Image 1: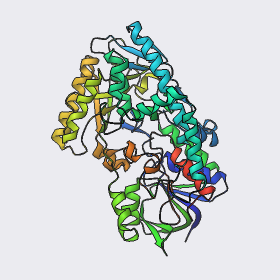
Image 2: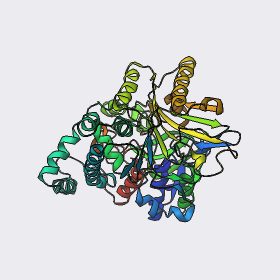
Image 3: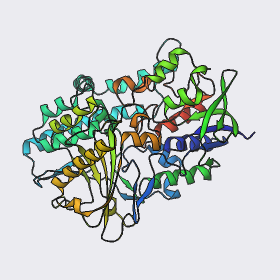
Image 4: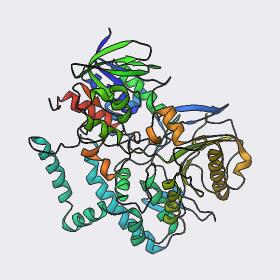
Amino acid sequence: MPSYDAIVIGGGTNGLAAAGRLAKAGRKVLVLEQAAVAGGGATTKDFAKGYKVSAVAHLLNLLDPRVEQGLDLKSHGLEFAATNLSTTALSPTGDYLILKGNYGETIAGTLSDADRASWAELRQKLMRFAAVLRPFKAMAPPRLGKGVGNEMMKLAGLGLKIRGLGRDDLREFMRLMLINVADVLDDELQDDRLKGAIAFDTVLGAHLGPRSPNSLLLLFNRLAGEALSIPKGGMGSVATAMSKAVQALGVEIRLNAWVQSITIADDKATGVTLKNGETLSAKTIISAINPKTTFLDLVGPRHLDTGMVSRAGNILMRGNAVKLHLALKGTPNFKGVDLKTRLVIAPSVRAVEDAFNPVKYGEFSENPVMEIVIPSAFEEGFAPKGHHVLSAIVQYAPIAMDTKARAAFLKRIMATLESYAPGIGKLVVKSELLTPEDLEKQYGFVGGNWHHGELAAEQMLFLRPFIGAAQYETAIPGLWLAGAGSHPGGGISSAAGWNAAERILKGKGRR
């Protein structure tokens, strides 16, 4: 039976990051990926003859600098078609705003002097508070309780950094942590286009509306990342560079390797069994896939106590975003907008909230909001000469939609696009709509949630994915978590994988 120091289940960016960090420390590591290519949601694919797209994620915002530098991804081919990408808040009238620099450092377009001044002050405050939270991403969540030693000291140290904001800032920080983004925007700004774009960014990928409690917390999480960028060759180039980097360190990657179960012997994780019947053993088993799938399917309830079965089963994983790809036989005209930007259709806070309301009742949005990228505007190779490909993340849709509902939702999406880019419908050669159900079936995103567990106040830090598994270690000796379902979540950051490997290497287990 082949034996390794560590077996990583899942060859997404978190799994590759964990494998790479362990390999740098001299560990013999095997990565098992069920798909034909590594990367998970960070892949580039052909979806029509002559047209290709980033399959799910299409922008980088949160890639952990430790991963990018620690694996020297640049030397393994990672380049960027665009960095510090601006965002254009579209308007049906063509009167749009462009948020330039790192999250709207400057704004171009017709905006009142009062809103410019208010936004500059609000942005500075948000960025300052996000910077205080940034260190949380690069660490395992502190364990709370008696007898945890330096864990409490670590939490106290971070608390001191927050306290260092000063009395007034601290009071404001605590207020904002408990508020929704809509109230903040309504208090500070007047322009609907600006408020709509920020509200959309806050709830992107979440089962939340701008008026949902604690929603501003997600904006802090987004701002704690890096400026937006587009990898050259699409998101698949990130996974390709990571794969080359870890293989150069000695990591073995096996594709089309479907794990059927995790082997539990004497109450310890000792290996895995593949669907083809092959068994593999390792001292450490690391799951970089969905935590619910890990515990309930690969480990199985018979190896878990009833409390853990209940906690794993109750992880919230509602995903309401769909991915749209359009092959276009010409150049779409968004009323004069430069296509070398990120386009957002979210005309107001109210529009985003109204788009969210139907999904609460299992229905799709009649007037969806969305983020759009035209990859072919940034570099050649995504579409034939003179043609383009459009990639959009659209909200909101329920996980369960029959054929009729899918067709109706696509019709509503196209109607929305038509109002911002007249004539775009006549350019469509082929369309592809990946619903939450498709994302679950094709990429293992349970519930269609790409974070493998909702990012919400009750599922963050030492509550992610649940108490007892929040420091990457599980109650089963030898079994660790390293996926987006663990802290700090998804978004192609790879931080969870790197954090988990660091904790394994430091021997920081509870045993």
